[in-house]
Picture 1 (spheres, protein in one colour):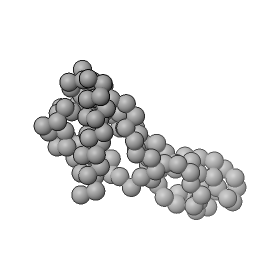
Picture 2 (cartoon, rainbow, N blue to C red):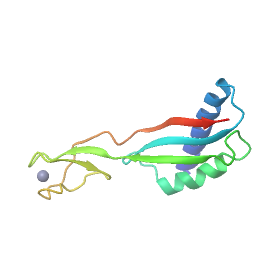
Picture 3 (tube, helix red, strand yellow):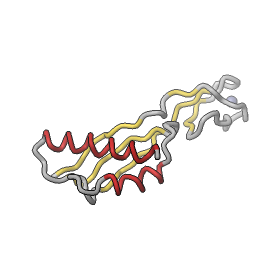
Length: 113
Ligand SMILES: [Zn+2]
């Protein structure tokens, strides 16, 4: 369960930050998830709920933002946002391998009490 360990990790980061800020409860965690990070969004959301049990983040909302990768077509130079590995250029239909970004997975902010 790849997503479970990621979810546990996210909660640990959030708890650590909340504790240092002197907070008692985590209301929401905002997360940037790269479209090419290999993490299944639905699975992560599912695991997040159980990862929060018996922590400061119990019942917290997960605000997930999927960050697309930037792709540049080598054939026609068209730039577009890709949400998968090796996408097809929407302009000329070439297979594009040149991708930048889209692999990030980071806690952007947390909302605490
Ligand atoms: Zn193209």
